[in-house]
Image 1: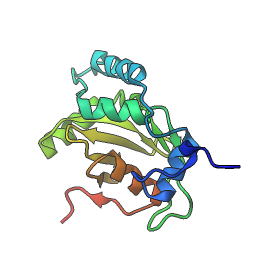
Image 2: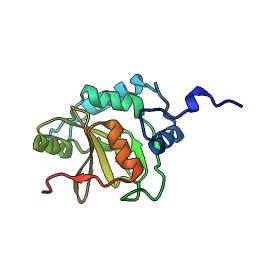
Image 3: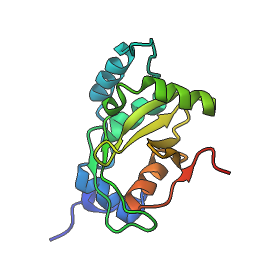
Length: 166
């Protein structure tokens, strides 16, 4: 029996990342703009008690449209760290508008929620240029220059770069 063309690994992601994404339900061409726009509307409508609002911009909406709703589990044990399950759902950061605004101000960009790592152990975020970050109780971490590299860092258990260190 011949494999279906959609079963073949994509050339976009390394094999382990491609496999984890496909197991989570991703496939090349996946695009749910309706869901992404609903998330964008919910984030725009939310105002924290102190008046903080979320930023919504094309890089975030595009990441939500392609990967939103996925629960991604990387192979264990990971190269440098144990990979945590990843859930792409920007509403995981709904009540963290100030945290994201503070990080954005420090980096000179806008930041939007992307999802979470583990069982709410870390918030995943994306900036206006598409760079991906993780924010947890130990600090702020740079995961990659775009969603592809960020997912690769998470799925493969690569050591992220701590922001502000150095």
